[in-house]
Length: 289
Image (cartoon, rainbow, N blue to C red; front, top):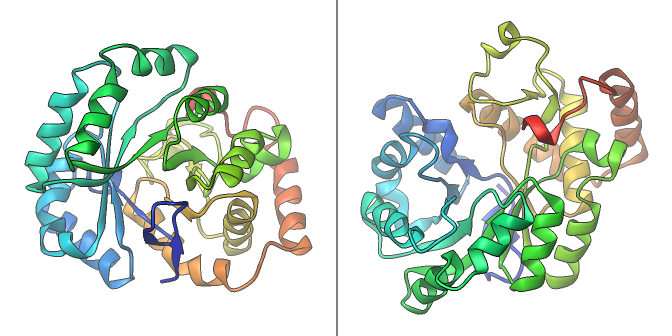
């Protein structure tokens, strides 16, 4: 799989990364199989979080044989000094001395940012941990564009995990401002929700992809390829598929086609035609993501 330099981290990361949600509530056997398959495909970046249920304890043993050859990212929703305890617990679970990237997770509001940067807050802890070698790079994740812009103004974060979704970008320009800032500051952008199609219509639909908050693109190669090419063209460096292993496998199948040519007028026509079908209540909605 193609490797991409992730911002100014110095890390050459697989174009597709492995989200820890994939192994949440899976058996140890299946978790090991999913990780082994990803490694075989050339994936070298794995991202997880304590808020993903049992994902850490499922991913840790599955990833252990490959730890020295991959990048491992973790994140926390803690905003205060309690992030230190969560960081150390995650390090212990993975039996590792450091995380390649550790992120302030789900910065959605200005209040989240202010709390994290307050005296005695999460950023003070992470900066100390970085100095001690427990964290190599500090990043952020979030759905809130304004909050992400605010955080990037406060500190030169190495990475941003952010929704880079074709329909939301085309309909509302959502993400354009923060992606421009990341490009200017050479922040590594991990695009999420790029393979999201639309909001769920009902719970019956969701049974096929129970870990996905929104309906993923599936069995529609033209749309999927156009959506991923669009995400890469507007600023995503690498992409993380939706949380079900089926979505990861599908993304891997189309990734070579995504990378073999730049975003084109034909791709835009595919997206515009589909946007006409999902515009309105079906449009991917950040408030429900």
